Image 1 (cartoon, rainbow, N blue to C red):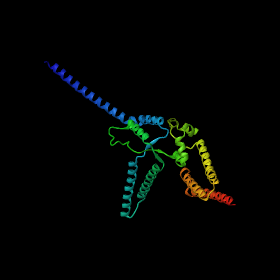
Image 2 (cartoon, rainbow, N blue to C red):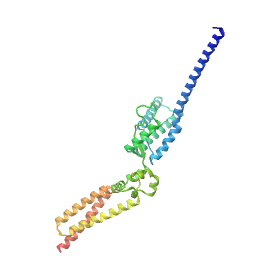
Image 3 (tube, rainbow, N blue to C red):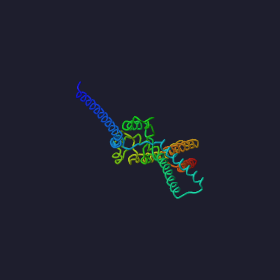
Image 4 (cartoon, rainbow, N blue to C red):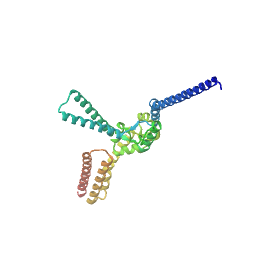
Length: 293
């Protein structure tokens, strides 16, 4: 083998080695770019797609309450403030910088408590089927291989200002909102705002004028019946025992219906029941006087 052939083989080996290193470097760079694209893809793409799908799936946006993180945040501020307190008591003096740091820490601590109170007082739990659907959707978009212990397992809630309208209703109005056809219970504005819920037959959040009118008529009709029916019963075959039993049963039933079906205070319930009883007693007294005369 000639020297030139040795030189050619050496150059070939060098070229192969350089090509292998170049290929390995290119593959490593491709992996890095792929990894970076995976890491940076969901903040600007998946989040937009997720929110778009959530707009299609639900009229009201639900979110995680993150109870663990909320409590962790509060305890973290507490520990930091206690350490500040210990240091200030040990030195028996406070510099302007320390006082400024203390003011910021106290403000952050108060804000954390206020946020915790708000998320508990002004939210309502999402129903279990909807909560599971929301959890699976989050996991489908954002679950990472490095995530441990199912981080999307949490309490899912809805903001509840719109729910206060139904929470303050009496039992009768709430019952009719849940059981009457949605074509009758939804207002025109709520039909536009909650189209998905309307199509799915979910109960409305606001009291419609139609339902309120039905309830008012029912209450007035039942109220009149409570006065007329006992009077008719006591008018025939009059006797003191019959009148006593009729008045006692009517007053008891009236008080029960007022307290369970109509949202009024205890004082208003007492006044209404006493007034009703007084009307029946006056009627009994007048009929008894007429019969004895």
